[in-house]
Length: 441
Image 1: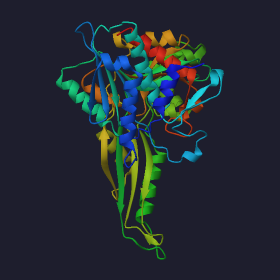
Image 2: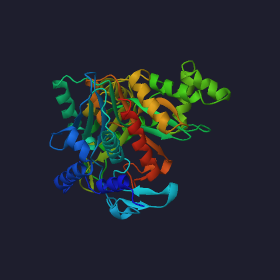
Image 3: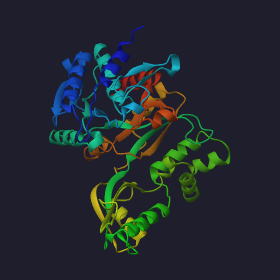
Image 4: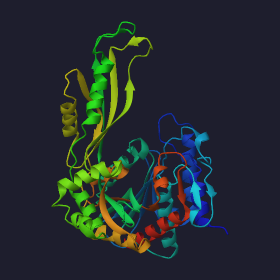
């Protein structure tokens, strides 16, 4: 049986809308993608105001019946690179439908990150327009074109909205999902990001005497750099709980019995022990308790037989809310404790402000989640990755990060990886979530 919504989704997944430097065919991909959006969602394009911002980002305004504050629904058009198509079980831009029943899934780059949300939003809006629905106040649809490469498109859209005096009462972008077994013995939990970590890239630089590899000198640049890296690896920041994580634990504890549930419900009292427990539970939970540092690039000599005079390492730092770029740099310098290692900030963005886990915006998102995922608890959390939504903190204090997907572990791991895919049932629930949320705007 034909499924028009699924057919539209698969068609839009076939455009390789890359945003990374050096990608080929980008102009054709975005031009084709925009044309397909216009043809597949005619009511959206007939009744909403559409602007092209920063060449490829899309901004739609859905006029409301009143003059109250606007709402913003976000997603991004771009996808990350596919380094080796031969490693994929199904071609990354074929959008093949594989399997039957509950396990039927669409395999494609962007199926989870982030075209499913983008197309699901449009499906919900198109259906509401067909039914004659009008929101109580303006609704903006914001689809950035380069979230994976820094988010200049979303930043430009925010600048436009600032000029127009728009201050949204609700912003929702990609983020948490519905996770089963977040802790052992726990049922499904919809985690909604109320903040996100800051992001910084630093370079560690060591400059020492080099020379011929046949006559190496002790304490060369690579050895000094290696010791610095090992100090960062072996001395992570001490774990601690910030308010959104306390809220997450309290929500989880409300569904658990015994001493464990009691401790979680009193997370504020047991901050120290629970922080240490999370730090040991999993890398994902540990990352919610501290600023993390990951060495991503190493550079030394360009010749195999030359000891380099200059050795460098790039460190990607994700800054926990409550800390800052400056404090994270100071902690790194203190941990390395070696004047021979220079710490240079390449770029950095502060953590996002924390949005409240209560009030009308939170309630609208929570009610929509419960309507579609009735068995799931709703809890705040700290988003570990960066998103376009961070730019909206300048015009709204109600910015949330949630993808209405119930994800299995292997699906979660396919984001930015090989064999990215989304189950058809998951995609349909995403449409239902956005339909429920639009009905509350």
